[in-house]
Image (cartoon, rainbow, N blue to C red; front, side):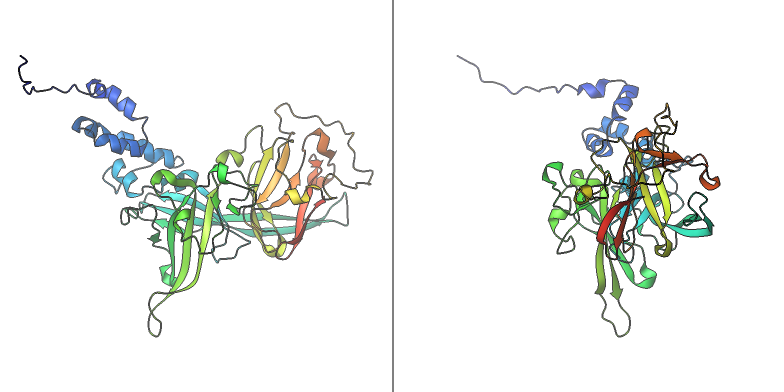
Length: 423
């Protein structure tokens, strides 16, 4: 006869992680991202204590603000408190350089270029427009072709600190605690202009097509793209992430409007509401190197349109980008009609051993004008190596410079009749 089973006390075995030496646990935890570290801290007291180690949280801040050497967490009490207070917006400072589909005034064709940084003094994340002025001009005749006037300028570039586009104060996300909600930023109140920040849902590659309107445009390299067309100004939930893991770290949106108030005006009336979409460029596409010395963010003087910012990318000659597909069969492409005998392909100029005289150069507008807008090519040098070389300049102003074949992009106002022509 079997005896009844009596209850016994089962002794749980400790988790293998918790019996490791403290320094090994700390080393393991240093490989976790912030969200995983928070989840681990909820499992037991021991791991909770380890997860509060401030050196772990310093690393998270430093990864997102690598360009400030003397970083301090004050006035926050700890690195952990600082990181949490501005979570989940640290991706903005990590990427730092952002460009938009519209200008701050709402103009579609010009766009904005913005630098986002962490302001340690005020413990906030702030985004300021990058602006450029012509500076000193000079005009002189070109010795090689006297009928051409060479226009030089010395641009003055600065951050416009008077009116931030982005200002994220500590605890902004905690007030809502939802990635779906837009959050009101403390910008533009002096003029009645208000703005709200919204996270974006990235567009998976398998759902992308050339027919879609996306940001950034297809010709600009991007880690991730988002949809950039909405009849309802991106109010639908399909444009917003449902969880933090769905949120893009390469794009965000800002909704702006003027709110009327005061005597004779009803409070809460929105005037001129619009949405700007911002994206970033991976820094390997604008960071110069020995192999790609001309890459970078450049300033171009577009006469009456003012200064515009260009992204110069140095690529392999056979890269699939280039002038848009509609222009590939243009008679201007690969047709230069050079009859002047001063152009010569027989000059003894060899390709540099470091590869600097190789590949193609693409100049893409990050900010634009009413003729050729942002997100479009402004010129392309298809091959800066020996195959594209025309001559080496001997005239004083450009002595020693390599002159290569190129295509310039021009259009009538409102980007009509755009065409690439040899230059």
